[in-house]
Image 1 (spheres, rainbow, N blue to C red):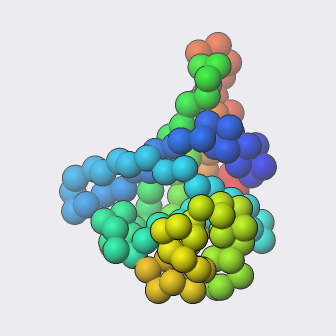
Image 2: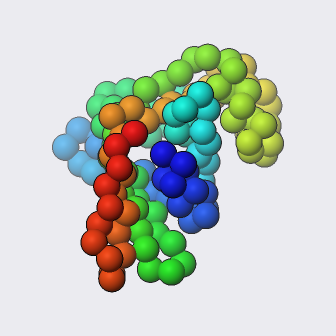
Length: 132
């Protein structure tokens, strides 16, 4: 899992794909953290991505490094109302306070990935898959 976190962190921007009914939807994300052995992300419950993930929690992430490697991650979003997870997000990314003011903002949501499968790819090596 640490290799997944490191890859995504170094990539800085990654793309989360969800479904809206039968249509795919992709958008950039920039926040990821480890908390209690899980990879967490955050969003607002006012956004379409939140509605899509609560309707169908399965999603995929893709990111590419500067050296031609990329990662695809599949999993299931589990929303977590635990204030300690939300507070940790504010520690990891203090700029969240500009948008949400505090971790107890009712619009602020954190979710972690369960049933995670990450595959690392490159143009020269065989893919490497890990479960987390």
